Image 1 (cartoon, rainbow, N blue to C red):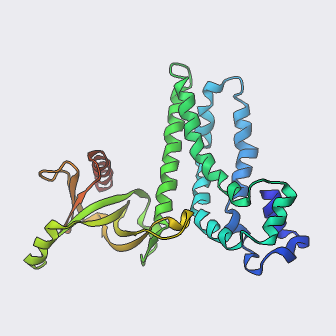
Image 2: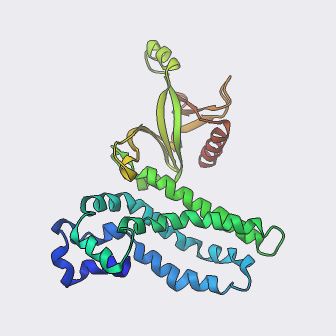
Length: 293
């Protein structure tokens, strides 16, 4: 892909085949694939080869390089932009010519998906290795490597949702790390509001997608988009946020094991939040508790 497509975009002999709108868009189309390739070629593959005789110790490779695996997050975040560019120009003569020269059965988009598939495959491979390494040396490292890779996958998944937030004025990066995201039923109780408003609020919940950052929790409304692939990915229109410095939490709400409360400014506003399952509720309550303490 890097030699047969990316490099060809800079080849003067091919320039006449490239649509003007596609020129200078190499970084968008390929993201940081080159960085991923060099990491594997120069670093990770060599590390793995050191363990050919001791496969059970391979967890160590992952742990030593865990920092570098975050390059996948960058690749996945760019993927929607890459896909939309590909869709506009997929039938261009330039791509057809590159594919013909490479004698590839599949078009470029199948290969651009590879890094996304690769990062999800690692956890399966590690799980499989763990299954056969229960009591041997290195099992702990394998387990830790699996946990770390799952952490990276969660970060990739969360950030894919986060880049779909629309209508937020500030800079999301200033809110600190994104810790959790998910969909909930939400009821709002405003102490200041008219009592009528309070009664109404009791009955019909709002569907909200919450994004918990270190410094704020964002409430968004999910909108399903029409289209295919990543185009169909939902977008989240920003509604409001609560600064974590002024937030309190009530972990149990009478009569429902899936509900908890987030309150604001000494209970001036109370948000009753219903998770899809008691397990999801427990994870969120723990994470919020960590932020608050």
